[in-house]
Each structure stands twice: as C-alpha cells, then as structure tokens.
Amino acid sequence: MNSARFNAITSRYRKLRIAVVGDFCLDRYLDIDSTKRETSIETGLPVHNVTAVRAQPGGAGTILNNLVALGIGTIWPVGFCGDDGEGYELRRALASLPLDHFLQTDQRRTFTYCKPMLDGKELNRLDTKNWTPTPVAIQNALIKSVLELAPKVDAMILLNQADIPETGVVTKRLLAAIKRISSDLLIIGDSRRGVRGWPSIVLKMNAAELAATGCSSTAELARRNGRMVFVTMAERGMTGAMPGGASEYVPSLPLRGPIDIVGAGDAVTANLAASLAAGAALREAMELASAAASVVIHKLGTTGTASVSELRSRIVITKSRTSIVTAPRHR
Image (cartoon, rainbow, N blue to C red):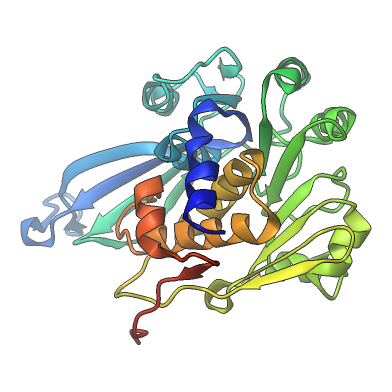
C-alpha cells in the first residue's frame, strides 16, 4: 500500500453506508477531585465529590464513535435503550445520526457503565444491565431493521456486549436473520461470549476467544468459517487470514507513554469494517486497524477514537509499501 492506496481507501469513507447492530451502552464518567474530599456527618464515611460528569456512547456505541471519527458518510445504529435517564443521555449523544432503527422502550434498562474517575484513574465501575431475556416484540423489531437495512448498506457490524445470553440485541433469532443476508453483504462480528453458533461472517476476536473456538490458528478458523478472520493479540500484534489459507501478521506499534486499553478492540473492529468496505486488502485493513488501536490506547481517561489524520500520523507511507512508525518502547 503506497500513498495512493492510503488516500484511495480513506477517501471512500465519506461515501460508505454502515449499520452498527449490537448492544449500545452509555459510558458515564464521574470526575472526582481528591482535594475536595470530605467526611459524611451522617455515616462518618469518606465523601468523593464529583466535579464533572461526562457521557458518551459505549459498547456498540464505541464502534460507532470510531466510524464517525473516520468520516463515514451514513451510519445507522440498530439497538435499544431504556425509557430512563440513561436512555435520554444515550439518545442525545446519538442525535446527529438516523435513529429510525434505534428503539427506546420501557421493557429494558439502558446498559450503562458508570466509571468514577479519581484524579484521572478509574475506580470500581458501577454497571447497569438487563437480567431477563429480550422481549420477543423487541427482537422482532430489531430483526426487521436488520433485514430492511441489508440492501441499503455497504457493510454491517455486529457486536455482542451483553454477558448474559439472550438479554441483549444479539439473540439466536437475530443471528438467524444475519445468516439470511450474510452471503450478499460484508458483515463483521465480535462477541465477548465467543462466536460458537454464529453464521459465516467476517470475525474479529482476541487470542483467548480464538482458543475457545477449538482452532489452533487464525488460518484454521478462517478455513472452517469460510470468511476472513482477524485475531488481536495485545502487545503481540494482530493476525488475519483468508478462507483460502493466505494469512498475514502485523506487529503492534511501540508504546509512546502511559496507555489505557479501553476501546482498542472496538477501534480495530470499526477500522477493519470501514477499510474492507472501501476496498482494502487483508494486510491493508490490518495495518489501518493496528494504527487506530495505537492512537486509541494513548488517549487516557476516555474511550477514544482515531481519525484519518491520526491514522496517517501513525503510518509511514513509502513508494513501495506501508510500514508502521517505530519509537523506543516505554516500560
């Protein structure tokens, strides 16, 4: 990939149409100033004073944020939130996007990660999630949205963030609908519960999730899956494979200081989907995704994103190939 290829791929982003189907969360940050610490008169316990509250989309919303940062032309969120204060905040954060396929319902709570930040360091997180199966009516509405959007988009991203099976967006019935459209559309999926039983789509996972499939390598899973597979390995980089057996390895970029790994995997997913939809080859997509992860992990105290200009700053374009910027590794 030379400079012309980098420009050709990224210049197509503004014309792409991508649907993000999955568990949208609200990431709420509570900034606590330790210099304003008090003691409760009633309980005698320490009081942490919150000086600022920040909220942004998380989960599938993190993928969406990365697509927005890349300048993707049209993005459809497909998911749900509760009819509660967190749902209000989440919809407000998504207000610039078409929300025709994003449901608000009193039958669900808004999936929320509440993150107290003491002087920039995250304390114990407070999570709000759903503990009961997603109602059939909501499942039906989501399936209808997926089928309606399939002929309108260049790619679809599928993210399962819910820990408890059948309580989120990605249910067995929704996966069955995905299977119906998977042969005609670029669909890339990621699941924190693993991908056993998923249809044949492009898969992105980490090394532990690969081990859970029973396959010993990325190439083996790609052959079995019949689609491309990408596996992230933290500081050891990323591997990718085609179903025909061709595989690639891209090393991780050197660290440039303190890091926060939250959101790196979602940045990889977003950049793989965007670049593949724009015509990138296997290695090209991996190089762009690796650069995005490097940008994101160096943004502290927030779930960051990577823009095209930031990707360019992490990739050295040469006449013959693309190589990653190198720097001394910090320990």
